[in-house]
Image 1 (cartoon, rainbow, N blue to C red):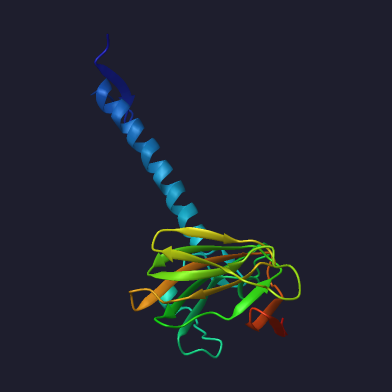
Image 2: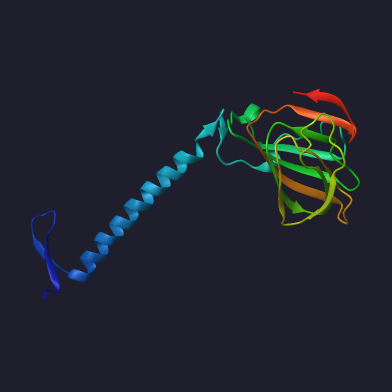
Length: 192
């Protein structure tokens, strides 16, 4: 078994190095090469964008809207209109204590993830007619998720114990048409 490897130096003289040292050097060069490739791909990925926006963004710098309700905070994290997404919109919404969304339905599926708080979901399943009818009253709370099927009338009402209800909302196939009701018995307006 050889413990030394003969290498030539720049001046042509041969010198011996321990074989272990040579193997470690080769491994180190390989690891460093992979690190350089990974770092360059990471830097390149940070510059990828949708509609000119960076891939990684700070939510606190996103524009907020309340759609005319001072008790609602709405942030579009990723969306069709704002970011050019084709299949989903992702929203972060916060409802103040005592506030509620309008009774509405839309032409898409909707997934909610409750991040903070507790509330009540009113859901009129199979309400694909002109009027939603009597909704089910379902409790929702932190760390649960729920699905609203296409065209099922629903409303979220923050009557929980915490000051705010915060939810992550995923909408399929945006942008969508929304039907809003004054109450569960009649239709009032169609929003685009």
